[in-house]
Amino acid sequence: MLLLLPLMVWVASCQPAGDKDDRPLIVVTTGMIADATRAIVGEHARVEALMGPGVDPHLYKATQGDLALLRSADIIVYNGLHLEGKMQEVFDQLAKSTTVFNLSDGLDTSQFIVTSLRNDLPTYDPHIWFDVALWSKAIDQLCPQLCKAIGLDSCTESGLAYTERLHSLNQWVSDTLATIPDRNRVLITSHDAFEYFGRAYQFEVIGLQGISTAAEFGLKDITDMVNLISDRRIPAVFIESSVSEKSIRSVMQGCKSKGHDVALGGTLFSDAMGAEGTAEGTYPGMVRHNVMLLLHALQTSSTP
Image (tube, rainbow, N blue to C red):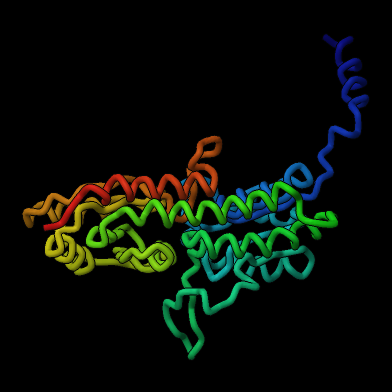
């Protein structure tokens, strides 16, 4: 064994230097951004996402490992509009020495949904990826910026193909959801993440919590929602993969006690995508999953 040790050291020292990955490191916050970024840069850069499947960005707290990863990044991409909560201070600090892209920057603010006014300044809903057309505009502008940042003269073919795919996806979503009767076009979930979706595809959206899952809700909120669902005979409600289903289960039980058996339409992906390696682990796959759930739960159900 002692004779083998020098040999092992010699072999290790002879490993080719090319084994080290010298490509630029891009660190992004959410899975939706990671999916687009990987499509844009291809093999020209490494992409790491901070928030994986089931992670709620509203409540996310960066670990020391996350902060170390951010400090080692050549490029950082985040959603903005306060989706990432208190991490804004971290991004502002890192921007002094690192290339940092706020994905929502550059978009026309008139396209954002205003949730409140503070000192006459608007606070915007950050869930822009639920309007596929708006999200595609964000990716359209990110593509050349990223490619320039990693040293490419123009956007990659795969990046351009990705944005074209989003344009087609938006049309498919519109056409598919148009088959749901108007009276059933009501989307009820744990928190108010789907307002962009509702505006883009003509759905009434009702969330038990507010825009952020950090918002509190109480017994009155549950009671009001139970009464609304029961009075309007809404056929189905939905849970979210990154939010506890306890509150929606309570609503369902309350509806049952009032004589209305509201169905559970399934689990929607809201602030996080599905597991890596699955169709739902991509942005287009996540969108298609959500649309098909809504279609199956609401298309054939009817209200009196």
